[in-house]
Image (tube, rainbow, N blue to C red; front, top):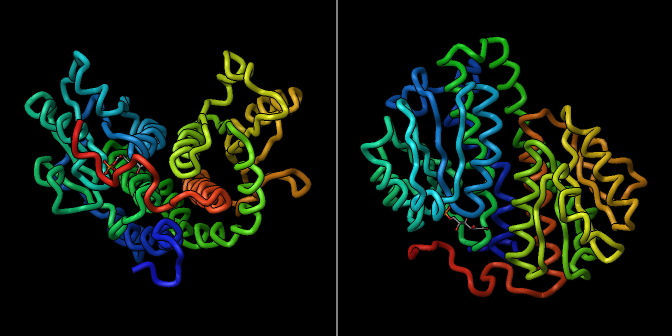
Length: 358
Ligand code: F6R
């Protein structure tokens, strides 16, 4: 049931304040601010490596989480798309934890990758939305993202749920390993408690986003850029955009632009830049200046975007919350662009909700 919404995708985008609040309550004791023992059988203390395997949007969630796990738990992280991972002669770590991320828990390549590593890694952990899925059954441990059924083919609330579940794991691992001190955890929990509200505030920016979406969809190509944790956000933006608007879009690390893709930039190429409120802001701004100098129509997304610039000024949030805020912007951007173009939002051509064949 779509309720008052014209599409499942829009309904699911709007469910995020609620789905994230639900997951927050599963992973944190909000009263005391303590992290719950979310995966009691997984011991991060002796882990020397974490590998995360997934496809599509779930892969970008692991890419975001790589920054968090390395930062908060100080464990080296490898991320890979399942269809490549399974056919690569891999050298396993001695104490390696393998995490498989999938909304459906049925994606063929991810499932096969899970089966392949069994016996070669210390622990397998499935992060899924469907608790009764094959992946949940096959892995040693399971963490569910509590997003509720996702019907729209383009993944939205599962993406933010995957990010939050993996962030909770990063913090759990960081606490267990003594990297995250109690004061740091309580500051991060304070930030996380603001997440549902900030996601709601971002949903209210839909009018600003609509204008930009209508413009972007006039073009044949769109380039999405970000640095650091905004880089996988840019990649997810490009995936969502091409998936439902059929406009060619590419996500790039902003610093990599001058190593090739800048050759594409002219006044017919809109460039969307995700500005993070982190140490890389200045560098992203200088990459943005390079594309403007080549005549690109630039759109900026971030909390410090000036009102006079074409862009979306997002609510000020903390570093861990910002990827969620930007995720909502990219989802609305793709959705509204698809509406303007008149494509089938919930059932894009050639796509299936769950890819159960290789
Ligand atoms: C994109 C999308 C796909 C899925 C991918 C993995 O919007 O929905 O890229 O993310 O097929 O699916 P799951 O998460 O079910 O393994």
